[in-house]
Length: 215
Image 1: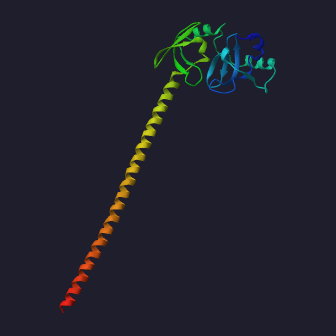
Image 2: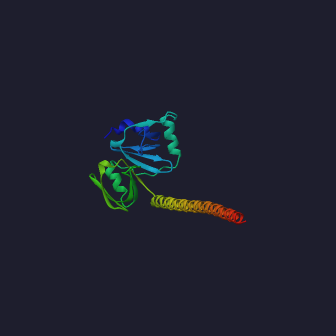
Image 3: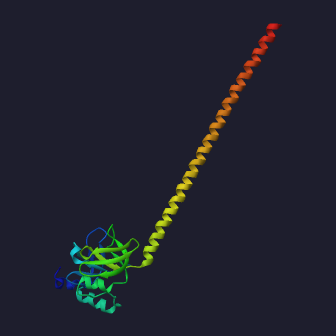
């Protein structure tokens, strides 16, 4: 856990979580608690990060003073988010919602959050009911189920396109092979005709000699 009081001055400012990898995100800090923080990212909504897995926080240097930033926040439409005292309690507010666990990599998971407590959480996904240790959750956010569906449709489309391209390539290879066979057949036919022509010329030459000898 961290001393949240030391970082309250960052609330309302644009910050960057981590330096690289799938868990790096930039956005506006909405709140910070001892074990988690809420970050609003444009186009993704609110993402809740467990502070134990945060390696660094970078503050955007080109910002107004805290008072000016706070005034801007008050003037803007408020962003809705779960303001809980701790991470497990926040997760409990998201139960029965479609969520995304972690931002990427093999530990990324999307599904319905069925249950959450201090020790583990249960997520109903396409692979079945997944039980994940709460400690190992780096980040969580509400997700759009259509996003996963669109992603799968895109993968299927790519696979179909790849299969079509493979089929077209195979067809082209067959056509090229057929054309080569035809050319080879033509060459063979020409050679055969030449041999036949030579043989006929030899026969004619032989007949002439025989006639000449008879005379």
